[in-house]
Image (cartoon, rainbow, N blue to C red; front, side, top):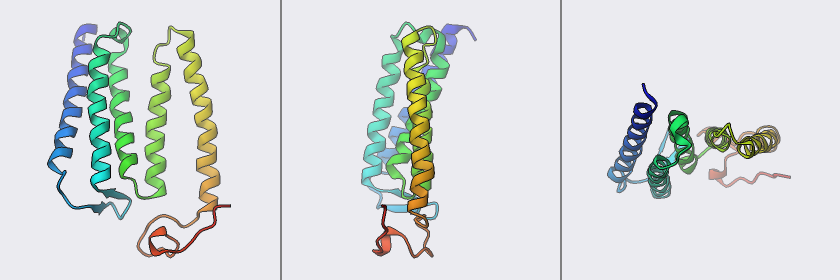
Amino acid sequence: LSPLAARVFATVVSLGAFIGAIIAVAVQWDYTAHYSFEHTLRVDAFGQGAGLIVFVAGVAATLIAWGSPWMRDRSIEYHTLLLIGAGGMSLLAISNSFVTVFVALELLSICLYILVAIDSDSLTSLEGGLKYAASHGYGRKILGAVVPQRVQGLDNTPDNGNSFSNGSEVAFA
């Protein structure tokens, strides 16, 4: 594809995905709250509202990016990362277990630090991406190593006796 055709294709696919997600949220808006995937996701009004905000912001980011001159070379990467990051944000809004929160944060943060450094010709963009990646590494070590040791057994499965839903207390210190 030519650069212009790739840019138009990526923009149309991104807009189509975001508009489709907005329609899906609007259709399911009046559904009652329910759990999915063994209680790891809770689909309720908060999650749908947050998803709607994320997807409308995705449409706005897609339209704003169309006028950016640096998007001529990196439009496919930008729109792909934007869609994956929006998926991570909407997953984070409906997460009901530690594992899905961790996966959603990873999806979101990896896309964000790549988007920070997407303009590889700019030293400030590369510096920002490197700083964000380093801080992500430290945050991941804290979240991925320390927290599971402190809250072992909080996986929200029905047969687990240590979940927050049954009223038992867990010490985090």
